[in-house]
Length: 417
Image 1 (cartoon, rainbow, N blue to C red):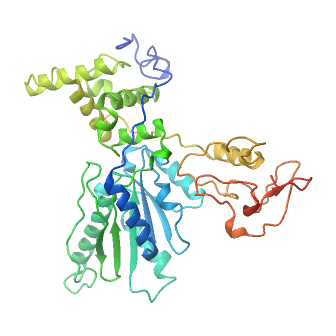
Image 2: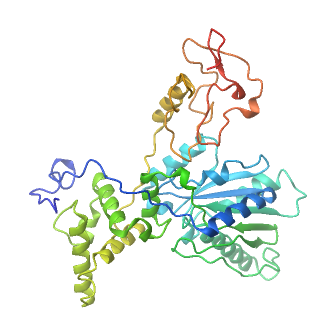
Image 3: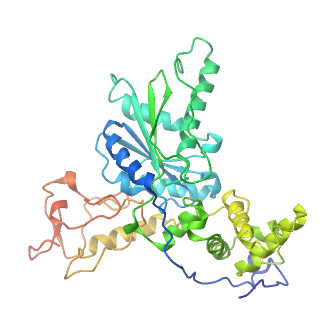
């Protein structure tokens, strides 16, 4: 494999290292998957307590807003539950990509918020969302109940702790007579960058006036039937499962492939490399030697896995580039996808095997803002929807257009398509 490509003029042709040609594809090996015992019991408890919840906070990693969606827990949320999608760690993507993700999710019909829980950024808006959407409609309620769900290591416990810290800070600012946190214990949820630290559903009181309570839940991975090698590799790179599940070298190789493809060569200067490379073994060996030189230790020399772990940790900390692992479609792409799905025959023995692919976690409703009201494909006529409440069907990730239960589109010969 090519180690590095020297370049005579690094910034010619408007981009760094124009002579370097990255790999066009990545060979996915195996299917990394992590679903342990506490996730199964936690999933049962979450579904059992869902009936008592007013606000459901689905926490995702902003570096993979669609791949990090826990749509299995949010698919059957009742109508009484107000759902808010929280894109955490938004400081690790560029601002324009973060705003595009938020707009795209909001246009699909779900409120969305960009946060950085480690620095308490925008967390106060979560409390404001709960008060505006629930207390105004139920003024006599004894208290508002929140539940935080999501994949492992996306920042759920950090958000719960941040909400408590903000409330305590506001109470100190108001003075001794403040009733905001009267009688509220300073108990915090255990938070770490290690996936799987939270193993039980925990109950916390966030404030006393107004009364605000919260369930902190363990991170639950998707079931194995939802297995997808690229999606799971992205989650492993984000730290949603232990590195040894997929292998440190394998994850470092995928991250190197994505950095080169996105033309993000910050790692070259950060790691004192002569140029960009596609050889992960050369990269990790170089890092190990660099660590051994700076720490004056020989333990790193023959342990390239430590170099791979160091490389992953640098990207996770935002030191070698900010970019999104998921493709964020623009408005035109979403509009074309909606039109294509509207004109596609429903899956069946005489139609295609499935609808056009939709990114997981992005709900494309039957009549979203990007699809004009009353849009009808050419050569078809519509009938009145007998049950509009069930329009769209499914679990929020795929829209079954044309089903008889969803107020389907009928052709001129009267057959429901």
